Image (cartoon, rainbow, N blue to C red; front, side, top):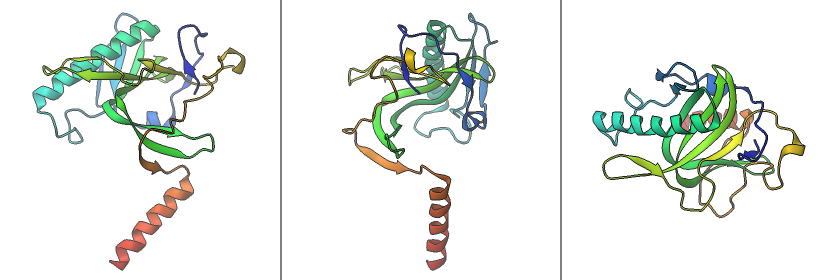
Length: 201
């Protein structure tokens, strides 16, 4: 996906990815209009899979703060739908030019998609945040990059992409947390190795 900014033509977008569509909708608010965008939570903040580092009251407050930021950007992007993939977290997946995928350290950011229909996405975005002692969120990105950082979703004509925006940049200086699986074959091999180790133990 090419990085996108407001000086570029608006993307045509495309269907949401199969991986995104398979995510559970834990909560949905809004009606799907520009004034009241539909916000779908694909991240569990208060159920069995919720983070354990916040009380229920703190989690509900955090959800309100995240939604405020997501709705604000939805209005700026003129989108009627948003899917919250993750609340502020300090890592991101980067892909090298050779197709290797790494989980690397990153500033805390919300991962969110934006679109104009239940299955039509136009943008993917990282909203980098800081958090005040009272739980309110504010925009904060320490490395000086764009905030929010936005990528065009779907096909985007090459002649409309400015130099330097061809793809997500590979940050070679960020600490690598782990190398992620890049192919189904690697996944099968890893699962096979786990089974073998389990038997041997």
